[in-house]
Length: 291
Image 1 (cartoon, rainbow, N blue to C red):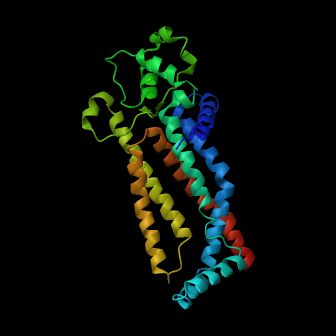
Image 2 (image 1 turned 120 degrees about the vertical axis):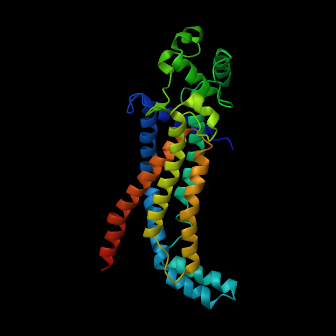
């Protein structure tokens, strides 16, 4: 799937944040970027939350209809549709924010993996020329020319004069955040310790934190929208999601640049804060109005 039409503006926006609000701090730029994305999606998140809350309200009716017409699928669907229409409930209403975040997440992968392409707008030909200018003995990141180029010229700024027509010193992006190169990918390969040093362990910590914050976010979110206790199947599904999602996030975070893990961690923290806000100002307000 070609997501350049999303990745390019996201890359330019991240670069703008990096140069202005983040003061050249790449990790801070990703955190601020994530905050903006979550704020943009907040109206849809509120809509999702309200849709989920309404679904909880009609669950007893849905369960009763499912029992009554379990042997008549046509009548079952008709009655369910009637309940949804009368209560203004859209069963798929909670899916839109999730669906919108997926292309953003996939696009951000390319932005962080290929910052020369998507943040600086360098063509493939320019990137290949810059890569060819790097000495053979310099450690290469297999499959990632952009990060290799940035790593080399950040540590060998004197070599920029030879490629001045391709890359200006002011264009260099400092990928370091708290001493970690966010362009690198976490790995269990202990042979890399000699090259990465303490970064080896710091990079490993990012997927762990991504999985942990996913667990906290999912657990908190699910606890606020817990299904009716009389619905053991839904409860089991909720528990499964709470356990599976953190492991999936940690697994993916081990297979992408560390910058994407920072995005995940930040997104999860903001998600919990958003949930707290929604509980206090949306759900509580609604409950007060019903009394």
